[in-house]
Amino acid sequence: MTVGTYLWPYGDLGWWGFWVTLAALVLAIPLSMLANILTPFFVNWLAKRSHVSLNNRIAKLEAQLAEFEKFPAITEAEDEILWGLKRVQIRMVGTETTIVAVVLLSVAALTDTASYKHMVLSSLAMLAIALGVVSQMWLRYGRDFRFMRSPRNRKSLQTAIADLKKIRDSWPSNSN
Image 1 (cartoon, rainbow, N blue to C red):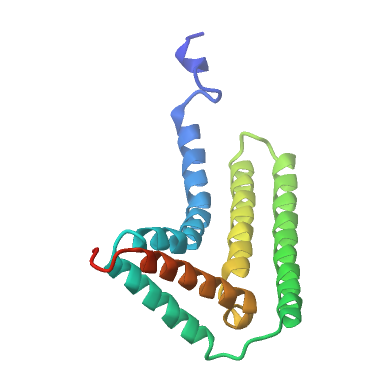
Image 2 (cartoon, rainbow, N blue to C red; image 1 turned 90 degrees about the vertical axis):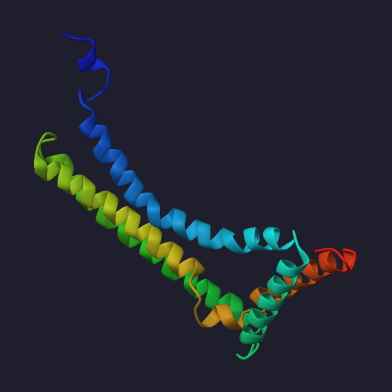
């Protein structure tokens, strides 16, 4: 019995490499989506640092608001009804992927843990969970019919524009 054999729970680094790689693949898309969600906040923060970038950011947000206003606005009630339907879709996708993952893991539990089939079934279960998470995020943050017509989204854009204009107006006129 050597010390190196029991240093890692499963004896070699290949086992850890497989799971780290799988985790990286599973988390790549959700982290990318998170980056896309946080980008407007980061861009607004950067825009506050100079007049030129602040004016460009205000112009970009005003153009986006003008694009939104091309579509007729829906009422708050219609927005809530459509958002409720979207939540049902999100929950259905989550339920379906959970069922698939549980079935795959159940079948994997019936196989020998050292077999190739067990590893493939476990990996497929993890892939099903990852695809479910990505699908839910796409449904949640995707730009659909409701997104362009939502009074809530228009209000948040107007608030962001007003906040940036307050910052711009508080600066001396000759600063860069």
